[in-house]
Length: 180
Length: 223
Image 1 (cartoon, rainbow over the protein chains, first blue to last red):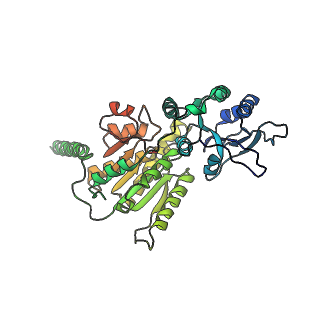
Image 2: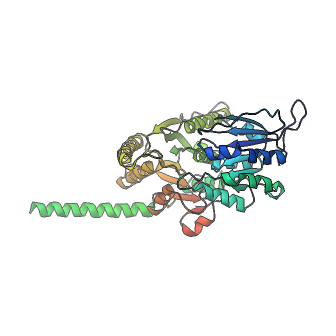
Image 3: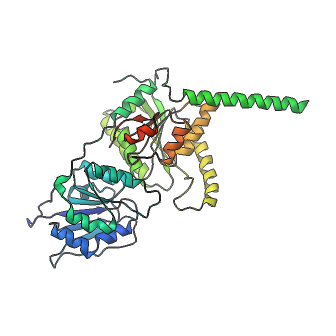
C-alpha cells in the first residue's frame, strides 16, 4: 500500500494526513495534536503530520521538527484533498463516506474516527462494516494512540472498487431505453 | 336538500381521490410501458458531503444522453455541490467533440426545510417556505425523471412529484439510491419514500437492508 515520497534532500518522507472533510471535529484534531499520538506516529516511522481541520475551532500547533519530532502543519479547506491523500502514507479521517471511499480507492491505509458528538450517528455503521471487512481501522479520539501503536497494516485487505453500472442498467430498463 | 347533495358530491370526490391514489401507488414501481422516443428531462437532487459524490458517481455511468435536459438542485446553504456538478457537466462537453446540440443543464438552489440545530418551532415556518419553493420549482420544471440519494431536500420535491402523479399533472419516475453509508437502517428520506411507495425504484447497497426492505433493489456498493 502507498508509501512515502522521496523529497529533494532524499530523506524518506512519510506523511500522515488527517481530514475532517467539511465538518468541525475538534476532538479528533485535538487528539492528533497530543504528544501521545504524535509520539506513536513517530515510533511507527512517520515524519510529517498534515491536518485538514475543516470548520473546527481548535487550531493545532505547527512544528518543523527541529527537535527530531513529527513535523506538523495544517489547513482548513481545499477544493480537493486528492493530492494530500496521494502523498500520504497513512490517512486518519472522519467517518464521512466521501473521505472514506476517496482514500480506499487510492489504496491508502486508513484509520476512521467516528465523531461521537454527532446526533444520529449513522456514519458509525459504515465505518464498523468496513472495519469488519478489514478494509480500514476504526478508532475513537481517545483510543487513537492505541490503534496507531497496535495496528498491523499488513492485515488490511484492499477495497474492491464499487460499480454503479447495475443501477444504470436497471434505471435504463425501467424507463424503456434499449440496452446499448 | 342542498347539503345532502354537497355531502354526496364530496363523498364521490374523496372516493375518486382514494382510488386514484391507490392506482398511482400500484403503478409506481411498474416499468414504463412505452419506449421513450426522446431524452427525458431529469431532476438531480444533490446533497452535502458524500451525497453529491455518490450521485456524480452514478451519473458517470448512466447513458447521459437519455437524460436531458438535466436540472441540478441543491440546498441554498450547500456551496460545493453545484460547483461539483458544473465541473461534471463541463467534463461531458469536453468528451463530445463537436458536441451534439443537447439542452444546457440548469443549476438551482432550494430553501432547506430545517437547518441542523434549528428550533422546531421556527422549523414549521421554514418547512412551509421550503415546500412553497419546491412547488414553484416543480411547476416550472415538471421533470420526467427524478434522481435522488438521501438529502432531506429531496423529500418536498418527491412529495410534490407524487401529488403531480395523482393529479395527472406529470408522471415523474423517481429513482432513489440509498447512500452507501446506510448499512443497517434506511435514512429517513429512504424510509418515507419506501413506506409511502413514492419511489418507483429504491436501490440499496448493503445486503443487510434487503431482509428489512424486500421491495428495495440490492445493487451492491456503488463506490
